[in-house]
Image (cartoon, rainbow, N blue to C red; front, side, top):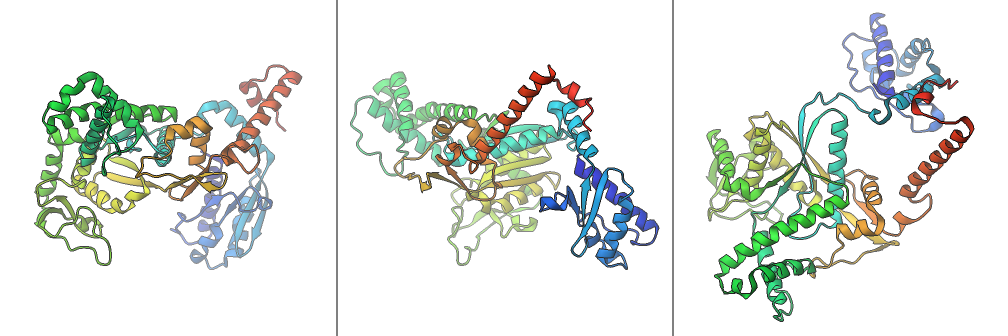
Length: 485
């Protein structure tokens, strides 16, 4: 139990005593009681709103009720002083022995400090990154990678069985575009002057090595084959090379995955048909025409023709959603449903997806689909990562996706280091925009949180070295049993 949970339990014990005395009504809701650090350091070590939220369950005013709670808490020898502030907030200052005990606990627990059994060994699937395999990762992907990795690590420390998953979007039209772009680079490797990369293809130089690999393996013979065969061969070469590049980028950031699930494999195995058949058996699929959204640009999957639709609106979504277009091809939504059903059938009732901000509008439909296809047994939680704005000494870094000019994740890691990138990506809530300034994150000043933490660590190490010179060998177990009074 952490120190705040410990003292919350003590506060609740006092409240239950007041219930016995009739000061507070039996059955009062304690769920809204908070015990947390006060906003002002001068207000003590902990603050609670207990009297404020319980005022409606008592004939006393919150300030007077706070006094009753404080009287009972004052009998606790580990509470040095109690102050009632404002209309009824209770501020606690703890005895030094409490903090000395915490230090001893940290030393005894060592690396296990902070672990808990909240997860009770339950399985949870965390999907993050899942960047399209059409090129190297950019800094925007870095935020989702770090947030997902940190979340997975925290869940493991809370005794969840965590599986880290990457969903490979390898079945869409972007993979055909990747293959055609690689074929252009192949012709370039064979000596042809290709001029400007045609509109609609990927212009990045990262595909030069793919073109060279194709040229080395197939020579001009491949270009004599039918176009469909050329695209298929280029796809089979380019896709693994792109995924290897992405894996290397993630490794440089200290991020790993346990499972890489291919979208194409879901089509090939019949998993997409299976998931849609299940929804159909539930009476949740029909043929119809969706009304275009009023006052908004229609989404990519909207068309004024009959489509196969999912009754997403019955599960909290704003409207029903298309699964299959009028030409018989699947929308992106269909294999995404199959992906999450596949996770569920692998034993993951709890699923967490980390998405970029551009997918925020997709949350309701996906949660609706998971609820439906798992018969409400599965739960999907989505974490959105907002955009990262790259700066250099206060000025925006210029990039052009159209021209294939962008800052890759690897370039950022190579310039400032893995630890700096990871730290900065976690300095703000994942759903808040973030600025990343190459100059500021390397400054040796208090304005740079990375340097501030590194400096504090260096000072602590210095204290330990000096103490070792004075007292001899200092081991954690010796310090844990030391008299700290």
